[in-house]
Image (cartoon, rainbow, N blue to C red; front, side):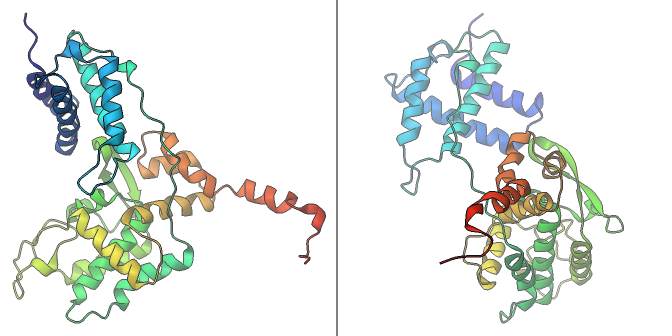
Amino acid sequence: MAVPNIRTLLEQFLDHLEIEKNRSLRTRTNYQFYLARFFDWAKSQNANKDVTPAGISDELVREFRLWLNRVKNGRGEELKKNTQNYHLIALRAFLKYLAKRDVKSLPAEKIELGKMPERMVAFLEATDLERLLAAPLKDGSEGKADVIRLRDKAILELLFSTGLRVSELAGLQKEELHLDRDEFSVRGKGRKVRIVFLSEQAKYWIKQYLEKRRDVSPFLFVAHDRAQKGRDDVDASGLTPRSVERLVERYSRAAGIPKHITPHSLRHTFATDLLMNGADIRSVQTLLGHASITTTQIYTHITNQQLKEVHQAFHAARRGKKGKG
C-alpha cells in the first residue's frame, strides 16, 4: 500500500491529536504551524519538492536546527530557545505517529531538545504586591466606570489567590464559580482539571463586581467598554488573555513598580508565597497544575530558607556579628 504524501500525513496527524489525543484546537494550530514550517523549509532544501517520511534524516534535522537558531522573527529578533524546542517537540510527536502507523522515518528518540538556559522567576515583593492590588480602586481615570474598577480589582485578587494562567482566567464562566465555597475546578494545559482555592479577598471582590453587572454574558469577566451603554441585556464579550495582560501592565505602572509585570508574574508570586510560608514542593506543583516537578523546581532557589540560614550562620563568621569598617 502506497504511503500518503507528507502533507496528507500531517493532516491525519493533526486529526489524531484532536480526536485520539484529545488535544485542544489551540494545540492543533500550534503543531500545524511548527510542522508546516519544517516541511516548507525542507522543501526549499530539496529542489522545491516535499520531503518524504523516509527523507527525514539526522542530517536534515541538524540543518533545520541550525536554521532555527539563525532565523529572525517578524521583529528582527532571533527565536527564543524554548520556541526552537517547540518545533522539535512537534516534530518528535509527528515521528512517533509515523512509527505507530509503520511508516518508515527517523526514530523520534533521535531528536534531543536543546539545552534551555535557567529560567529567572519574576515575582512581586510584598509591598509591590499590595500596591498593585490596590491600584484599580485608586485609578482616577476620567470616565472609567465603577464596574470596570471592580472587575480589574477582582481579576488581580483572583490571579494572586489561585495562581491561574491568564488563558485559564480569561475563559472562566460565572457558572464555574460557586462563591459559597472556597474552591472551584479549572481545566488547564492538556485539558487537565485541577482544584484551585479562593481567598476571602478574591471572593469578596468577585461578589462586588458581579453585583454591578447588568449583562447576560456567561463569562466571569467581560469587556464592559465594548458593551452598549444603558442596556441591561447586553451579551458582553469575555476578556481576551491579551486584554488581561494589558490591564496588569497598566496597573503595575500606576503602582510605580519599575519591573515588567504580567499575569504570569502574579502566578510566580502565588507559588513563591506558598513556598516561603512552608508549603511543600509537591503541593505547589499540584496547585499550579504542572505536569512535571521539574517545572515547579524553578522556584526553589529563591525560597530556600535553609540556605539563607546557612549563609547567616557561617558567612564571614570571623569578622564578628557587628559590621566593621
